[in-house]
Image (cartoon, rainbow, N blue to C red):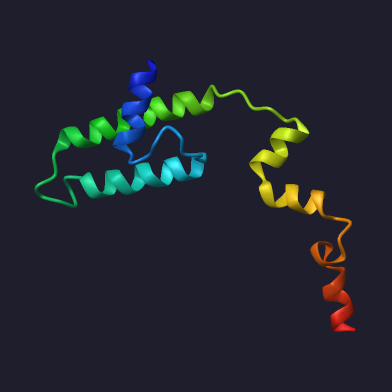
Length: 105
């Protein structure tokens, strides 16, 4: 696969190379696009469109499945920003939820 092929596959799915995607989102988009292009559901559907979508899905998933994941703390907090905020401000009673507990009692 080339970068141009990956980029073309992303654009076919309506994604951009700067998008942060999950496998779930990629599969959902593929399913929705195939459903819209399926000849059994739409009489004017182009049968080559499904082949193009399946090839694009193959290219994207090949890239995703060969992606190297980092499990460093820095990467963890980059991927889950709300946990980064919780970690950063856990000392603060408002962010840590202590103020809510005091208000309830």
